[in-house]
Structures are given as structure tokens and as C-alpha cells.
Image (cartoon, rainbow, N blue to C red; front, side):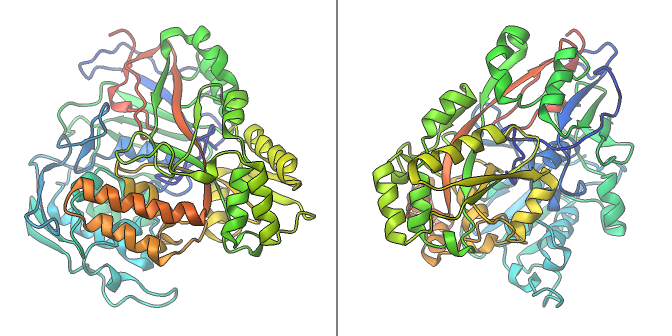
Length: 541
């Protein structure tokens, strides 16, 4: 899923060598910011660790440890809370917003976090010539279009007219339309600030980034291995990280990481493999935990491919899949069947929004026949390697064969960091595993970044390359609504358009099922699928 596209375990993963051959963290620690370093699993990030270009779970986990946003999200309610850099985000008309920063926040190089830091960063991320994957998130700021240009050409401007520095701790943001939920978005990665060091050397910065968060990077990220971060003692937040450091280890296979966890040589695996779930509770006891995650796994369709250009074909494929049978047989409680594009943890979710998400073999065959689909040619089923997807994707293929008479071949040979660019380049030759974890808890975030015209690659994560003016208009109507209830009504109408066209088939919602070693405590994974590494305690409390 892109932030987040997720790699999987049936949501995370890629990667390879370990930084060390043994051991999690060590040393005595407590909840007072004492000592001890612990180890945590990640897959290989797609890109260097720059917030504006981090759009997937693996890099996102590290970036979240290195940065703190303007707002943060309550672990229990997912509501935006002002425990981050912002003192307030206020507006009288929901269109022009004044962001006031708290004093005392610094980057890891000691330079201050100022209003100018945000304005410079947002202008850079929005500028199409910089090819940042999170550029789309600034599309509703006035002047964004001036920073967009066709490949090989220069944009009309380099600064969005909707951004204005008032003083060191205050800046204004003017949007193209009212957006009442704007403050809630500001905890997302795209909005994190960058120091001057980034602009001096963007390439080098991505290897050893300088953030403003609870941990800092004293060394460069090693491809295929990972990175060790240390606690930032001058952290501007309410309290420092509880551990002295966290060692993010890159693995190619989630099962390898889980084996290391079982052996005690890895401390935290934020999503254990599906085939380990049944025995995990017996093995780990209270160190095995489950929490809802704001995500969705879908079967994306390459709408640019002639075979899948017809919505009737896409609806037929969706109706031929028995989601409940797959969750019961394979996921063993770690997934629930999806009947909406919106996660149940988000206000506005409807349990029965999708009429084509129920198994209906007779109707599926009628639609496929009516569309003139050629059943004699097998379909490719794409998924990323090493993340536990092969079994359930094979089950999907078997159901398509049995229910539609369509043969399939599995295409699961690409690692996650290779899989995402292939999606962006229209490289999918058949249906493909697609995952999304919410960036912020608003319905729009489950719909816009993945299906709106404005989110087509390279600016966004619309890898089905779906485009519908009615959908875009309804989405914008929700963004401009002056109340949450009115916004939800418009977003639901946008989702209805999406469900009729079916650029992807919603399949499953996830639960985060994770475990940790005896070396650590206070381990929590939030509904964004992130280990909250700043709260982890090493040793006995």
C-alpha cells in the first residue's frame, strides 16, 4: 500500500541482510528516557528517506521515527491532537488557514524549525520537476498548478501563491476551495518540514536524513541492511523517546524475520505472517497483540489494458471472489471481507456499500459474457514477492478458474521496491494486489489519492489509471463541505461512482497482528500500521 502503499505480510515487507547476526537491543532501560537499543523488522524502502517522496510503509516506518508532524493522531480515536509542532491551525472560512508553531523545536542538526521550513519544503514537494511522490497532497493549495509542467519543461513558478510566511512561528495557507478537514491532514508525511541541509544536498540527505523527531540518524541507510537511529536528546515534543536507539533491519522475507523473532534475535515484528497467526498467541502470550488497521487490500485492474477497460468485466471478476472463504482458510482472523473502499476505522464507512463484493457466480458469468471477454487466454495475477501474498492470490486465481472458467498465472517475482514503479509505469498485464493504509483518518484519503484524476502517477498513487469527472467532482464537493456530515455525504456519493466503475475490487480489511521479544515492552502498532517506536521500553520497566 502507498501511505501509504503497503508491501504486505499481507501488508509489509521486502529487504535482505541483517545488520547483525544476533540479538535485539541491550542495556537497562526504563520509561524515563534511559538506555537500550532494540531491533525492528522493515522491508526495503522504495526510495531514499525523504518525507516528500516516501509513499509506502517501509520507508514510512523509518521516516515516522525521524520526524514529528504539525499534528499527531490519538492512538485510540485517530483524532488529530496538538502534541506535535503546531500550537494551532485555525480558519474563519475553512479556506485560509493560519498555522502557529510552538517554540523550541529544532532539527537534528540544531537548526530551528520555522514557518519558512514548512513553506520551503511544501513548495519543493509540490514542484513537478522534483518528482516527489507526495506532490498530490498540495493540489488544493492556491498556486499548485503553477508548479506543474510536462516532462522536460519548466513550470511557470517555483512558489505556491497560497503559502505565506508571517513570522518565524506563523504561516498562512490559502486553499483553492474550503476544506474543513485540513488540520487533520497535517500529521501526514508529505507535510513534514525539511532543514536547509536538504536543499543544499537533496541526494545525500536521503541517505542520512535530518528530521525533527524523537530519533536521529547518525549514519547512512544501508541498502539491503537498514539503519540504526539514536534518541534525539533535544527533541521538542512532550517527552523524549524511551529507548536509546532503534535498529531497523531490512528483510527480504517476512518469514525470516519471524524466525528471528522466535529465536530472540529480533525484538519487534509489526505484522506477523498469516501462517504463523494460529500458533503465535500460544508462543508469545501477552507479547502477541492485535489492533485494527485503517487499511484495505484490493485487486486492482489495469484500466489501460483492453481486457479490463470495461467496468462489466471488472465487476464480474469481483463477484467471482469468495472473500469470506479466503479469510477463513488463509488469514485465520487477520483479515475481514471488504464491502467498501473505506476502512471501518474511518467515520463514513458503510458495511454494505459494495453490491459487487458479494459472491454471485451466475451474475458474474452473465456480465463477462455480455462484455465479450475472451476466456481462452489466461490472466496474469500480480503481487510483490516475499510478503506472504502468494497463497491468497493463488486462492483468488483458483476461484476465478472455478467460477468464471478463466485460467491464470501468478506473477509474484518482483520485490516491493520493484513492484511499485512497475505499477506507476502501466506495467501490470492483469489484475494486481493493491494495498493502501490511510495517511490521515478522513474518507477522502481512502478515495482521492488512489482513484482521482489528480492522483495519476507520478504525482499520486492512482495506479489503476482510473479517471471519472463525476467522481472527481463529488470528491471535491466533500472537500469543500462546511461540516463533517456534509463532507461524508458527498464522499459516499463519490464512492458510489467508484463502486459502479470498479477500477479495483475491495477484498479485505486488515488487523495488525504483531509480536515482540521479552527484551522490550510497551510495544504498540497504531491503526496506520506503524510501530510507535518512541514508546518502546528496552528491558524491565
